[in-house]
Image (cartoon, rainbow, N blue to C red; front, side, top):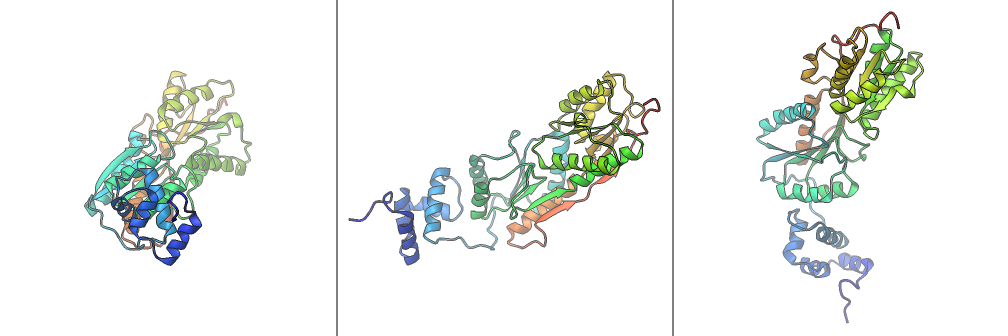
Length: 355
């Protein structure tokens, strides 16, 4: 008497695959689903429950079914999906502007979504992507699990991670910037002005770009012969409130820093507010350096010295890369880092003589 699908071992299913006798109907029977459902999974169609899809895909793999790789699949939706870790308006606007520049040329429409602060997307997000069937997905400051990457790859949905939150796997295409060099350059600028008590307000401790910027800060202090003070190294959230509250703490101590390097321009705005409330003038009493060079940084009072992160260029490069992958091309480089540069304005000056 033949065994039921539940009684069949994985090795037995593998024997069927090797013998080439497993039809889609047989796989459907083993999975306990209909043949059209198996066909949907095999052809990368949406509207299949995650647990069902995973079961069917395992059976398809066991039976040797593989979708043809390296051939571009039509994307009838004409959509390009941008997934933000957080939609911080000023920062996100620059990325959207860069993505739109290329999407417009390619006749694509942007779709925006947010992971609400989560660095990893849930599996239900993959189902949404499959439903929309975009020309490509760009994840900004987010991470993909190995399972999510595998699901997207199995359906020929190209994706690129921009400014990854963690260290992406070797096979994950990514676009970043020289964060370490940016942190080093910002701190070196303050050291050259004569500052020795230099504080830093980075982003979240677990975010790759934040760690790299602080590592650059530490390296600049070390090469400048200044000992790093752990009390002057703080982690924020890349939000205005973090710059304000942490800045106020650092500037309220007796031996306060004469300069602050913030992990982004938004936190620098918070530091400006804290300094004003404490009666400190920028740059006479306190020098401030930001990171990003958002358009608003030139309008702040005084205009902010900052590290320019080419957000528009990064977004354009990410879109071009994901579209190349979607056309089945093999880009010369799947991992890019664009250069940062220091933009000196009026928020930095030598420290007060009395200090």
